[in-house]
Image (cartoon, rainbow, N blue to C red; front, side, top):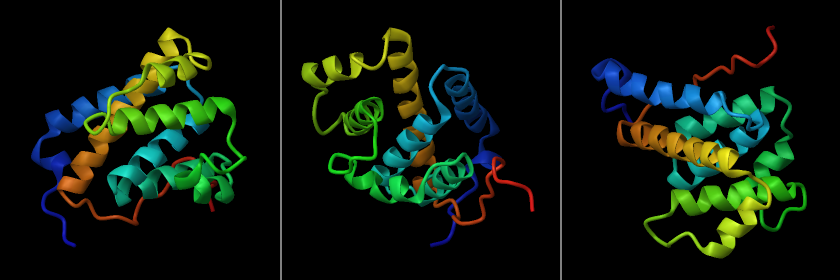
Length: 155
């Protein structure tokens, strides 16, 4: 597939709006390892190869194991995720797929056991941000594969 357009060049203001949201996400108290799992899972659901490439590379560079990345689509059956990570992944799926099904009170209660009000809002903003990035990259067919993590060790 060939790129339809480069949204960063076509509308710098739109790109900067997404970047501002991303910067806010990284000011939160959420662990970077959790954010990479959330971003990877949403990107899997949305079929965004560019974001999945980026966030799995960043996760690996930050020390995430390949096994946990491979098992991410089946996180409910895999014992290698903490209760907090499971709650975040369930919330990620629910917020990402909100048009298909409402977010239940039971899920909200489960997530609140692991996230206070502020961190739950921050987590939700992170999910909103990655869904926005996914939609830009999928819609405009951003070429995948060239991303190099700034967290990777220098050769």
